[in-house]
Image 1 (tube, rainbow, N blue to C red):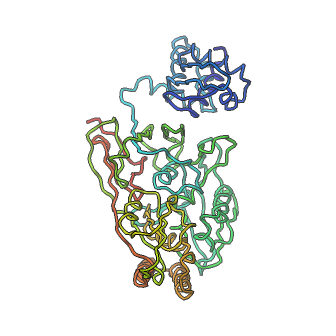
Image 2: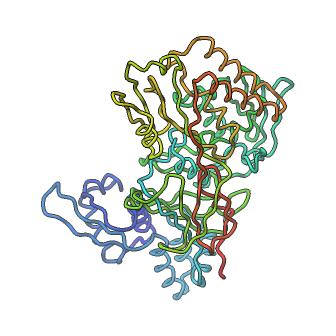
Image 3: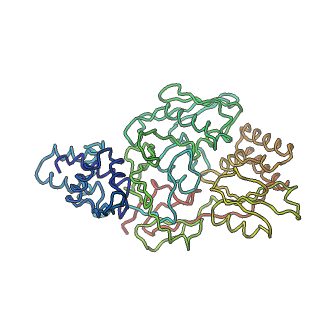
Length: 500
C-alpha cells in the first residue's frame, strides 16, 4: 500500500464505524462513509484484504450486503508497519506513520516503544446486556450512558464524598445574593481532538442546556451564561441559587466539542478517557494522557454487549472484569435508586373507574406495574425519564448519581405535576419550596428543607416512595481501588490492575 498513513486512516474509519467482528454492509455505504467512489472502494478493500486487516465476502447482486470482518486493531496494524520501519532505521517514515489520524507522532512513538516491551496490557472490560444509546450529552437519560459521558467529558464542578470540588473550574464565587456566579477555568485544558477548551465552550454548552426542551425546567432560573474571557465565565440567574455548583456537576452539564463528524456517537470531551469506538457491538475508551487531574492507570476500557446476559442480570448489578468469565468480588454502593409512584390523590382513590398507568421501560418498573395494577387498568410503557405521557399514575425512578441532593432537586423541579390535574395550592407549594431550598445558603438547612418537601408530598398522597435499591458492581479480584458510584459503576481513572 503506497500511502500507508492514508490507508491506516481509512481503515480506522471502517473500524470505528463497524467495530471488530463480522458486519453486513454494502459498497455504497462504505463509499458514503469514506467519501470516495464505489469503484475506489473496491480498490481500498482489495488493498486492506492484502494487508491482512480485513476479510471481505462479497454477495452477488447490486443491493446485496457483503460480510466485512475487521481482523486487527488500527493501532496494531500501525505497529506492524512501524516495527518493519524501526528495524530498517527509517525514523522519519516511522514517525509519519505513527501520526496517522492527526496523532502526536512524538507521543505515539513513546507508546509504540512501551507497547513493544509490554508484558501486561492494562485493559478492563464491561460486559453489558443491551445496546447502548447514542452518547449525546443533552439527550442521554439512562444510567450507564450518563456514566460513560462523565468518563469522556468534564463539568465545571464535581461531587466527591458529598463535597463540591473543582473539575474544569478551580475557583467559583457568587455575589452577595447568589444571583451571579463567576467560575474560573483551568488553563491549557484540551479536548480529545487537541483543541484548547475555553470559557466560550463552557458557555456554549450551558446555554444550549438551558434552552433544551427536556432539561430547561431544572435550569430555567439561569438567565444566561457569558464568557468574560477565555478562562472566566459568568452565570446570571433570575432567582438566587446557593447550590448552583452542585447542579452544574450533573451529567447533562458536561462540556463537549462540536464536531463535523457524520456519526452522532462521536462524543469529544476533555475527560480522563476518550471515545475510540462506538458501535452496536462494543464501545471503547482510551486513556487521555492530557487529562488535567488524575490521569488513568488503565490504558483502555471496553464495553461489550451480551444480549443473552439480560436474562439473569438484575438492573442494579454490573460487572468490571479482565476476562470473561472470571472470579469477581462484589462491591456495593452507598447511593441508591428510588422507585416512585406519582398520582393525584383524589382521582386515585376512585375504585369504580380503571386507572391509566405510565411506567418506565425498566425491569423494576414493569414489575411494579404488574404488582400495583388491577383488572381493567391500562398501562403505557415509556422511555426511561420520559414523563410527557403521564396521566393518572406514573411509575418511575430516580438515580442519585454523584449527589443525592442535586438529583432529588432536579427531579422535583423537572417532573410535570400539572399532568395529574393537582390542586393549584399543591403546585404552588412545590414551586415555593423549591425556591426556598435554592435560596437557603446553609447546605444542611437546604437538605432539611428538601427532605421536608419529600415528606410533605408523601403525606399529601402525591408521591409514594415504593422501594430503594443499592447498586452492586462485581469486579475482578485483580482490579483495585473500586468504589461504586451512584451510577452503579466506578470512576475508571481511579482504579488499577494488580499483578498479584
